[in-house]
Image 1 (cartoon, rainbow, N blue to C red):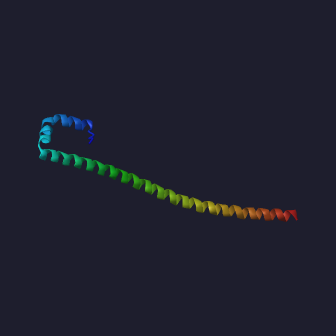
Image 2 (spheres, rainbow, N blue to C red):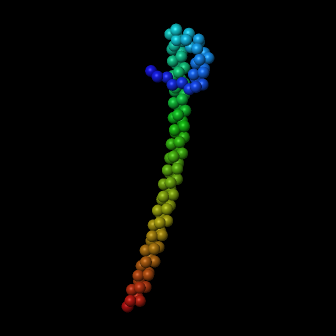
Image 3 (cartoon, rainbow, N blue to C red):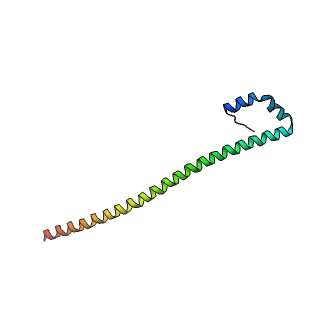
Length: 100
């Protein structure tokens, strides 16, 4: 088992060394310490998950916005393409008329 400790946590451990050693000497203290460590770990995990969820929501909203813009762009380009096609038809008809 590996436990990661921050610098602040290490300072706190050194400060409370005797109390911590006493806890490890008795089973009840050890169980209490493990519960505290587990709780801290779960709280940190929950915060990471919350942060990731916020990021994912923001990314999803950006994706939805991008999709809507793409739909609008597609409609615009299709209309523009149709106008160009109609103008090309008129120009071709005009050229055909001049050739005759």
